[in-house]
Amino acid sequence: AKRVRIHHLQEMKDRGEPWPMLTAYDMYTAALFDDAGIPVLLVGDSASNNVYGYDTSLPVTVDELIPLVRAVTRSTRRALVVADLPFGSYQVSPAQALETAVRFMKEGRAHAVKLEGGAHFAPHVEALTAAGVPVMGHIGFTPQSEHNLGGYRVQGRGSAGDTLVADALALQEAGAFSVVMEMVPGEVAKRITHELTVPTIGIGAGPDCDAQVLVWQDMAGLRTGKAPRFVKRYADMAGVLTGAVQQFAAEVRGREFPGPEHTFH
Ligand code: KIV
Ligand code: NA
Image (cartoon, rainbow, N blue to C red; front, side, top):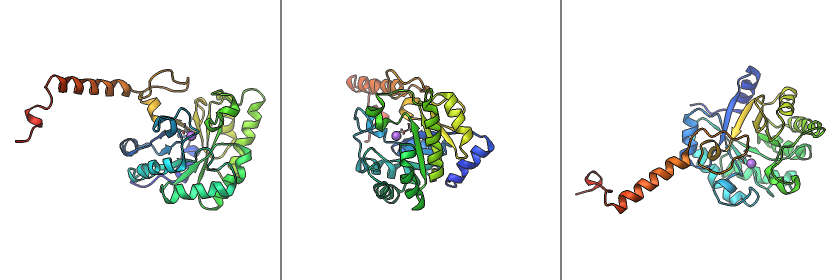
């Protein structure tokens, strides 16, 4: 299987073919999603609250994420693997961003990186792109800034829509190969998707983006409880796993497992 390249994603936009993207953080999910034909896998800093058990995406570190990136790249043959730069690992300067990105590329064997922020981060995107690192932008609701944005809120309503368009254009101008838009009004996302030549990737940004991304534990129903409006649950992984675990426990307690067929003589 040939590795997906950034030009393939551009070609899909140019053909008007929407493409799916998912997060992945380990071997089995990465291999399954790769085999299912998902062209782009993101090792998100969402590992913070979906793998490491932190309450937000802020605490997770580069050292915690790199082994996950390495596991995902090792386990895929086709998908383009994007490593998310975590909070504090790139905001200081373009030089810091490049040092962090290099670690994700060398140690994690990532094929691209993603960072959050608009026009202010154009110099960071430019430094990475110039050094040979493909960059995916991320605007709208950016979870690393939740304390500044006042919690999980839709961004770009009203006149803020123009700022968002300017941010997207600045990232593209700086060399970003794609831009994630999170929790943005569908109308604004549609406008940005038309104005940008590079692909847009929506999460809570309506149906008109060039691609759609979801956190896999959300879309597969491993995470239970109240989900954001933009999540669609395609399976009940929590129910399936709970059923399996309960049956195993009951069979051990009832001396039904292991049976003769599981026993060596
Ligand atoms: O960390 C993450 O999972 C993300 C996606 C939701 C875009 O940034
Ligand atoms: Na993220």
